[in-house]
Length: 111
Image (cartoon, rainbow, N blue to C red; front, side, top):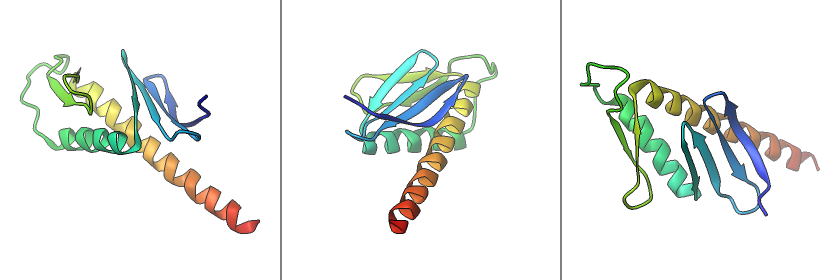
C-alpha cells in the first residue's frame, strides 16, 4: 500500500511520490498518471523542452500542444496555458522534493 508524500498540490492538480515504492502520481486536468522515477523525469524534461518551442497557434485556447508520455500510444493534448501550468507544477514539485531530501539529510545527520 502506498504512502504518499505531497510534492505539489493546487487547484490545477497535484504531484505525489510514494515513500514505499517510489512511484510518482501526477493529476492534472483530466489526466492521472502513475510513473516510475525515470519516466517522471522524462516527462518533466519533455514539458520543459516544449516550453522553449515557439507557439505557432494563433488561438491560445486551442489544444495544439502534444506531449509524448512514457506509454506507447498515449499522448497528452494541452493548450499553451495548460502547458505553462503543468510546467510550473512540475518545477514546484521538483523544488519541494529536493527541499525535503535536504531536510531528511540534516535530520539523519543529527541522529
